[in-house]
Image (cartoon, rainbow, N blue to C red; front, top):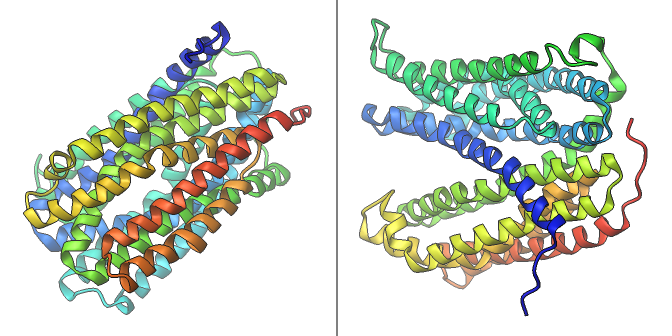
Length: 453
């Protein structure tokens, strides 16, 4: 029996959609930047494609922990904003930048050590040279990239989202222009190949961070209790609170990204066909996943603001609205994966064997789409409550102790091939999504409000 939504719930759905659409588009814009880099070096040949793709993945594996740690700003800034404490929002911004500086040093040091170790990983000689060159220069994009994350979390938590989307569009255009100029020597500049692609990425990320800083300064120019009224000083206690809340979120994302990376490595052991089909399906599913991932960020903001107002009903409406929107989107993607898988795969490859294997994998993806969306949004909603540990623990158990071992057994012991790997991942995601939905339902009822400070 259909039960109509209340006016308050409809209002929340509209508010959530208004906040989420630019956030989702920004996530898709971020995803598009890596696609542009790979496509732009395509004419240089397989070694260039491999160097840019591999270097980007290796670098982002390190960056993921920094990204995840800074997600804690969603909680602190949104709750302060909901409580009407703009001065506290600014202090959390400053503390986030301080932590980003520390994380930049850590990430750049780890990346530099990784570059020195690249010859030990057995890369093909034709790949090792351009990979080393590309990665050495890409390392310098870490500080502006982490600053961008801080600025974006701050702006989103205060409902300023459309300019973030526009800044990402500008950065993508800049990335494409500088790639075209430096890779191939256009506009009177030298042709630098993959080195030019690395410099283009650094420049685009500098533009991205500078754009968001400019937006913040513009918004604060005449606001009472603006940035000019809050002293910029080092606050170790705030930095530590961000890290303490953020590291479980960082580990959760690392675990989630890592399990798919591990599955890709295992697919590579099966053979080129399995590896190619696996990569195509990961790209398709990953692009769609940006929708619930963005909705999860919006849920963290709306839930956190309601917590700051000490509005329990508003808090629950925000979480359930985001979960409902994600369910609709992911149900739609499941239908697409089930009904037109070959059409989707042909966007990436026309190889008949790749298409055949990819169809099977997309069928499996269609089974877990709903649960993947639920876990992404529930993770964000719980982050709005200040809970980042539950998702971390459930990802560890669901992916690494259940899903991946089952996938390994089905793949190599039962002879299911790459479909066995994805079946195991599907089981893990179904368990994680169901558990996080239950946790959100229970915790959103039991949350005890405390004064924001």
